[in-house]
Structures are given as C-alpha cells and as structure tokens.
Image 1 (cartoon, helix red, strand yellow):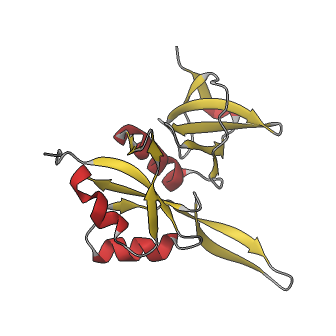
Image 2 (cartoon, one colour; image 1 turned 30 degrees about the vertical axis):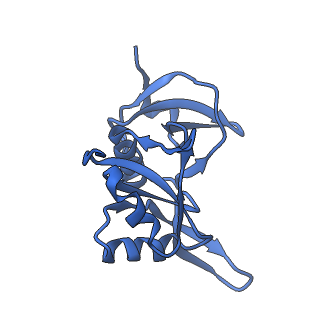
Image 3 (cartoon, helix red, strand yellow; image 1 turned 180 degrees about the vertical axis):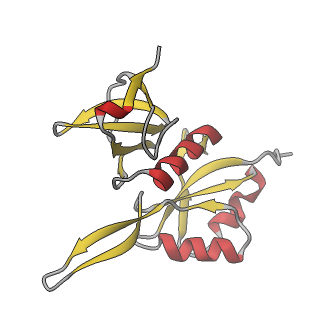
Length: 168
C-alpha cells in the first residue's frame, strides 16, 4: 500500500501550457504551485507587462504517491521528473524558499538547470527577501542568490551585496 503522505513533485507540461494545466489542476482539486512573475516584453511597436511562468515547462504538485495517475490524466501534464525510473519528490523547505523568492524579489527571478558549483551560503539581511538563505553565485559579473531544488535546478535573483551576510 502506498503512503498518503504529501510530497512536492515537478511535472513536465506541454509547451507553453503551464497556466492551462494549473487551471485543470484547480478543477480536479489537485494542489499545485505554478511560480509566476510579471516581466516587461518588447514587441516592435510597444512594451507590455505580461505574467509568465518562472520555470517554463513545469508545474509543481503537492500530492500523495497514490495520486500520480490522477495528475497524469490531466490534459497537458506530460510526466513527472524522475530519477532511476521513479518520480522524485522535492523537500517542502525548498518549495517554500522558492515561493518566498518569487513573491518578494524586487528583481525578476531567473531559473537555470545549470548545475553551479556550490558557493558560500548567505543570508539576506535587508530588503524584501530578508531572512532568505541561499547560495551566492556570480554569473556574467552579477551577484545572484541561488535557491536549489534538488535534482531539478536552481532559481536565481539579483541581490545587492550590501544586503547579504555570510552564514557561519
């Protein structure tokens, strides 16, 4: 018998279907998290703010293992992120940190599946992200704080160095 314990899992979606899949999960009463943010997009004749997924092609579900089939029966939900053939759960604390970063970052949050070398652990001590702990990385000359999602990737945002303190 499979456990009824809830875990977070990443689900691949059909291309550009994350919002539609989230609406279908809502109808099916499947708990999900789709990180969204406002960004400015430029067209040839205008600049417009649009709401886009932070992580294209994925949505997170908070379910017991017994609901795997129900999730995959939703149109647009393609497959779970797997390791060694089994869906991989993401620790609650990592999803909570991602939610905090997306909700309170003053800068757009980027997502990268590139595996960075572990850097110094930092605590953000000022600003909207105060209290968030992450890893300091430098990309293209800019200091960013990375929040890792094990076996999945990394969420990144720019934070002024003066807002950071080292964690001992």
